[in-house]
Image (cartoon, rainbow, N blue to C red):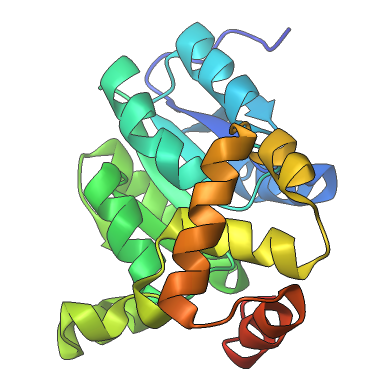
Length: 215
C-alpha cells in the first residue's frame, strides 16, 4: 500500500504497461519537489481502479497498453474522475492521436522520447488545469488542416489498432479477446478497414500497414 500523500503535493497515478518504464518515470517524477506518485497501473482496468481509489491530481497515461484502448478510456476516466487531469505519454507522434486524446479530455500530450525534458512541465501545468502539447505536434496541428492530419484513408484509432493486430497475424477471435471486443465487432472493423484501404487479403493489409509505418 502506498504511503499517504503529503499535504499539498501533486499526486500522480502512473499508467504504463512496462514496469521498467514506470520505474524510470517514477524516479524522474519523485525527484521533483511537490510530486508524489501514489500508484501505478499496467492496463486500462487497473488504471481506472487506481484513479478511483487514489483520486490523483494527475494521471499519466500510456496510449499503447494491452487490452482496451487507452484513447477510448479517456472520456470515461474524465467522467468518473473530473478532478483528475490526464497527461498522455506515448510514442505516437501522429497528430491525429493527439487530436483524439485532447478531444476526449486529456489536458497534456507528451512524447516518450521527450519525457525527460517535457513531462515534469506537463504535469505541473495539468495540475493547474492548463494544457501542454508537445511543441512539434502543436505546430503540425496548427499548420495542417484537420483532414490532412487524420490517419491514412480516414481510419479511426480503433481501426488502426485492429489493423496492426491483423498485420501481426492475429485471428479475429484473438483480436476480440485482446481488445475486449466481440468477434462480430472485430469483423465489422475489419470490413471497414478493407473498404477504406481497398485491401482485402491479410498479406495486402500487412503490406499496407508497413507502407504507412503502422507496425
